Length: 383
Ligand SMILES: Cc1ncc(COP(=O)(O)O)c(C=O)c1O
Image (cartoon, rainbow, N blue to C red; front, side, top):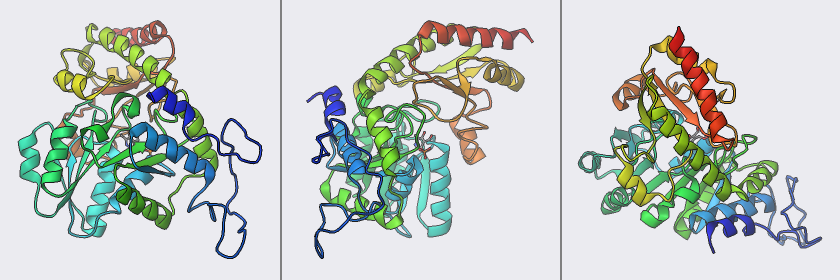
C-alpha cells in the first residue's frame, strides 16, 4: 500500500463493541482482568493502551519498521533510545543536531559516563576517525535543525554496522513521507511527533521506531520501565493528525519551495538554507535520499541583530514561536530560542550565528506568506 493509504487505514478497527470507524480514546488508567492472569490484551495504561497501540501501529507502518513505541515528547523518545547504552559506551553524533538533543547527550555524558563525540557527518572520514572500539551508535539528524545540512544515511549506517554500532536517525524534519531511513540501513528512527506527524501544534509527543523486532522489544520495555509512555488523548490527536500527513507534507513543501526562491532573490538575505534549491551544497544527496524537501527554510540576514529582531517581530502571519511542522507558519531565532541550550562553542563551530532565522512553512497560501515576509523585510531594511 502507498503511504497515503497506510496513513488513513492503519491503527483503525479497534472498537469491537460498536464498530466505530475511528479508534476511540481509551481514557482509562487501568483495565479489568477477566480472570487471574487473563486480560483482554491490556492491563495498565503506562504499559499499554489501545489508543496508543493504534498510533504505534500507524507510525511503524509508515516508517516500514517492526514496531514503534510512542512516548510523551520527542525528548522522551531521545531519552528512551539513550537508555539502550551504558557507562563507557560511545556515541558519535552529528555536530548540528537539535539543541535539546545536544543538551541531553551532554547530561548523559556528565551523569552516566556515556561518551559523546560531535562531528560534521558530511565528512565521512571524520566520522570513521571518531569511531572507537567503544562506539555503540551513530546519532544522525538529517536534514539538520536549523541549518538543513543533509548527510548520507546509507554511508553512515555502513560505518556504524562495520563498527558493530547502531545507526539512529532523527526523522522529525521530513517525516516518513519525505524520507524513510530504514531503506538506507538505519536501525532506529526517532520522531518528535509534536511536529509534522501530529501537524496541528496541539500536542507534544514522541516515537521510537525499530527496524528489528528484538530492538522494538527492548524499546518497549524501556519506555514502560522509565514511565515515559504517552497519554491516550495525545495519541488520539496524533492519530487524527497522521491521517492527513501526506497531503499536508505536499502543501508544506510546495509553499517552502516558493518561499525559499523568494528569499534567495532578496537583497537583504545572505544565505538561504533549503536543500530543494539546486545551489544548496547537499541538493544532489537530498534528491537521492529524500522523496521531498520538506517545509523548513532557514536563512541568514545580511543586517545586524537589530535588523534580525525587526524581521522576527515584523511578520503578522508567521508567529514568533518555537516548534515546527504545524499547519500554521512560524518564525524563530535559533540562537536565542530552539538552540539556546546548545553549547555556544558548538553553535559557533557549525555556523549557527545570531543572524540565522528559521521558518516553519505552514499550509496557508504561499502568496500571502511571501507578502508577509516581504513586508517584514522591507520594514527591517528601512531603519
Ligand atoms: C529534530 C528534533 N528532534 C527532537 C525534538 C524534541 O521534540 P519535543 O519538543 O517534542 O520534545 C525536536 C524539537 O524541536 C526536534 O526539532
